[in-house]
Every structure is written in C-alpha cells, then in structure tokens.
Length: 82
Image (tube, rainbow, N blue to C red; front, side, top):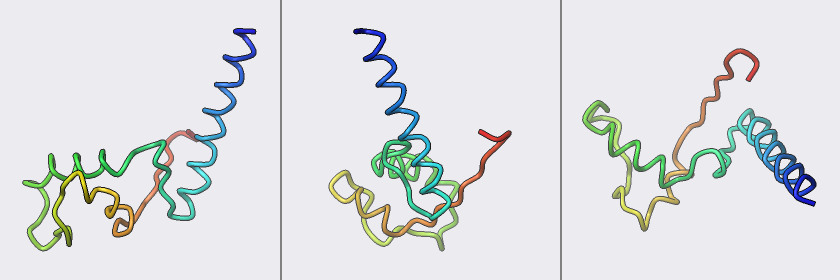
C-alpha cells in the first residue's frame, strides 16, 4: 500500500512538472514551480540591481503579490534536455 501511494505521488509530481514545461512554452507560469510570493521576494532582493526605469506598477506587498503574474513576461530555458 505504501509503495502504491509513493508511486501515485511520483506520478502526480511528474504530471505537474510536465504540465509546467508544456505551459511554460505557452508563456504560462505554473505556481507549483515558483509562486507569485517567491517572485516578489526575489524582486525585492534584487531591487538594487534592477535599473530604475524597470519598476513594478504596484507596491510589492504580500497582499498584492498575485498581480505579479499578470505583468511578467516569462522566458523559459531548458538546459541539457531537462
């Protein structure tokens, strides 16, 4: 029973990863891979290195982090067939 459960979980994770790769080629970001909150956190961390002309049109707060997925442009890079 535990083996079946583990295999089922692996299958679900594989499906999520496959969907994420397929959707990324369409410009759709899967929140299972990186959440809007993680994107906002990374923007805040990198803000000193981002040129001033590149600004976010709303405050980078936890309450508004879901807006980030509507304004980002997604570029996907696959390395070594992974």
